[in-house]
Length: 107
View 1 (cartoon, rainbow, N blue to C red):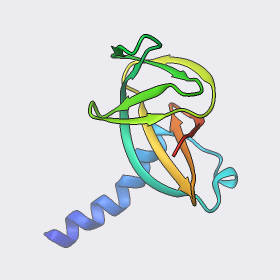
View 2 (view 1 turned 45 degrees about the vertical axis):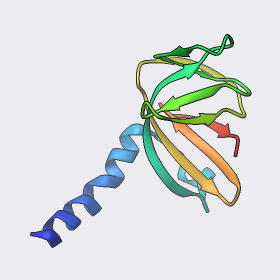
View 3 (view 1 turned 180 degrees about the horizontal axis):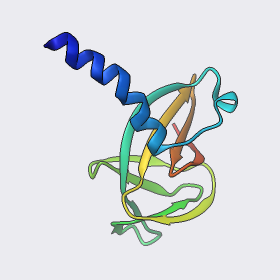
View 4 (view 1 turned 180 degrees about the vertical axis):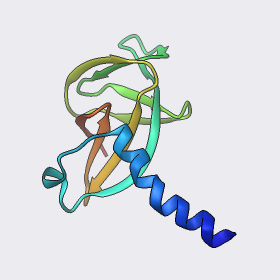
């Protein structure tokens, strides 16, 4: 039974990431998928927590999975409610793919 569960996870987990983030693989050769999350909000300019996603701008703190945070290092506007995020890493270079948009993330 355990082997069946492992096989099913191996077969279907990559497809869950594809649904969350459609990437051109050639642009991300050498990157590792670090984790998958849900963006559950952001911290606005006044320092208050907002429960929706409005994209990234330099220094904006995104709240993921209600209790973790990442900081944007790039810019792009997009409104969404609880979009999926895939975190990618290549050495110290971090990127977040959120609803098919890729943003640089500060370490």
